[in-house]
Length: 132
Image 1 (tube, rainbow, N blue to C red):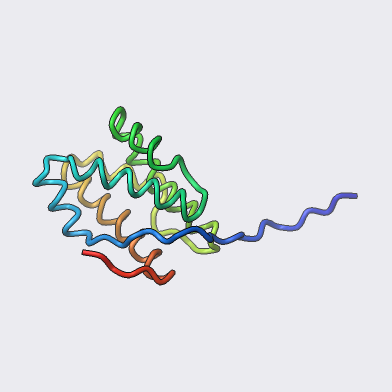
Image 2 (cartoon, rainbow, N blue to C red):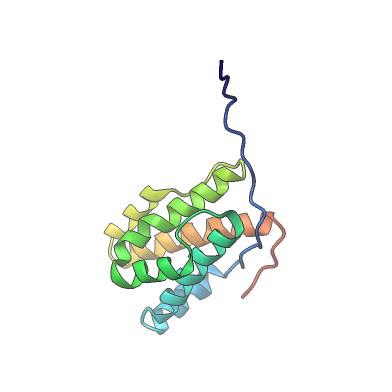
């Protein structure tokens, strides 16, 4: 008889990602007309994948961002949620956080504040140094 035990979080053991200033990230995306957003999406997907082995990774995430950005608005917070849950934590964001983007511009800023804020809290709780 196979007795399955409940799933136990395995934790995340890869290198930590870099906390990024939410305000600076918003400003850089705006003044570069979205070009910094491409870099941000790549780094976010890449850091989550390397740290937790969750998600699509940097290159695939970049391709998704470039071809169907709207999909990334749901994938990125979903990956943040999975990373948090794999570490035994409740996540402040989830895939549905992407719905903020229905409010053009202001919703995207709110989405970015929520997602980058959740990432920053996670990375800082694990000991990553805050970056500008």
